Image 1 (cartoon, rainbow, N blue to C red):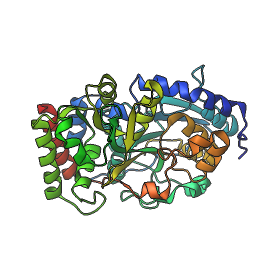
Image 2: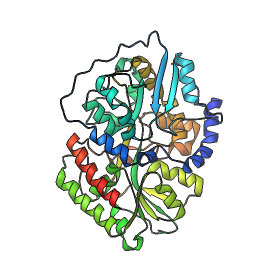
Image 3: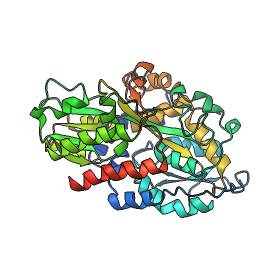
Length: 408
């Protein structure tokens, strides 16, 4: 494929405008922030939909990509490079190069609410209205477990060779035969550098009496509970169970009941930090980059001493999609290092593409050194993926977490 060179005016325009976009994003809900925005109703619906019954084996739709050069792609907000006119430069480049017309829908506002909308069609192997969608890895694990997604043809995605080994073998899809990462990020801790001048090193530091009533945590169970479990010495990627989760719930419940934790929120935690309603929080890495760009570099993000969590949003092709080969083409395009670097300059999340960092050097050397976008092996060794839960665990653990949220 023919790539735009690093000095392409469209790429340079993206870099010039990326700072302004960061400022704008800090005032609105980010991709991760939408996890808590849809309310508890959608979560309850999705949990109720986690059937443990016998699955019906589904048949993939007939692929008509050879004659229909179209693709419908559902994704999260603020997850694609954008110019001043609202166009998507990299996506336009794909359309020009491939001849495939893409309908790009900002349609995913929450994993659970999206699943609730399409679960019936998924269960029947019907078209959900999208040929590919990017959902968070734990939701993708559910789709894989239920047999709702098509097998990818790696021969049609030769750039899968650029997939970082760190993301190549998740427990729900070893070898990435059914899914492919889009973008990712970390959950860690952050603090107001003026209010907490000594900084924080661990989750336990959040429970310091000096911060009572000034701590925020995330409403995403896997990130908040994952960090607490890591602080207790639990390998969240390994063989832990009810006892380990209960121990972490005891800490979480106590800190809420004692008033140490002031707020449990999705992206609204950024408003609390900015208003100084909270001085410290469990947070998402990309959010703090954007907040500092908008509000003056007042906050610091760190991966706790005991480790942080790593999440990915991930491409899948539903069984009912009739354009799998077109979806594979767009995946292949975004795994070109130059394209991945251009995208990273805008979205500020972890790219899974090997070679993107080197390509980013030509765009912005400082960007290429950002560990929150291009983490090296040392950084990656400090973060951990919350293991895939069984359907029963997912129901039970989320219900326990939800009870504290509703009572807070």
